[in-house]
Length: 273
Image 1 (spheres, rainbow, N blue to C red):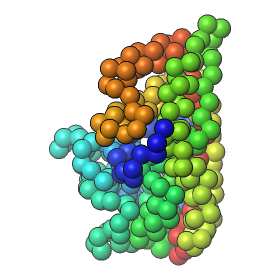
Image 2: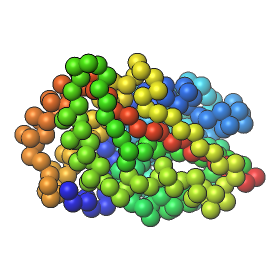
Image 3: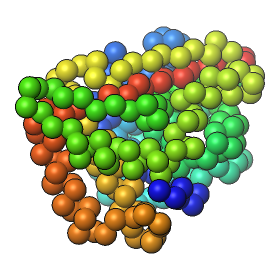
Image 4: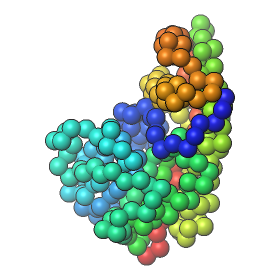
């Protein structure tokens, strides 16, 4: 399959934040970060989507200033749907943020940007995110290793064939992109001057009760990407009718007990005081 052109569209299983938190030992912010925060921190969320992550933070930090940024407002909820202390704004993380946003935040958080990033984009995005941080502030960035995704049978009669076919197409189409981020962010953070850089790695199948939900979320993102490729007329893209039939077969696999496994890398680092 041909590699798609550079895009900042970010097909994700939006609405999956609770599932990811289950796999990250049930924390929103890594303890090394949360333990340093006051009761009214300023927190930015890059690639915020619907703002769900910030909505969850608002329950923990009702006095916090919570701002989400995304390349597009397409996924932003209607006015009034978010907590009062959550604001969402359009911003491209691959470009320097506006001056008024410089050095405003105690924490900058990002997650699941991999499909929108080329190998060179990670360093650019990180340096732009550093401009948002106050001295002593922290970055938390979570990225999955989709390059080594595997599919497993959860029961004696489980089927995995169609899920494996679709996952292989995704891995082939995004081959170069999937090798970076999870593997390169720790080194990039150290090179950028961050201190106390740490990495927490958890398996997506760590909690058996959420294996199916996480697999479904991944498949939603996968088919969203496939439809983007089809709409752009990319080589080897499938027709919408073919995708509809394959989606039904994937649903059958999942209901039979098929589940997906990959590692989630949570990388943290602190700006010098």
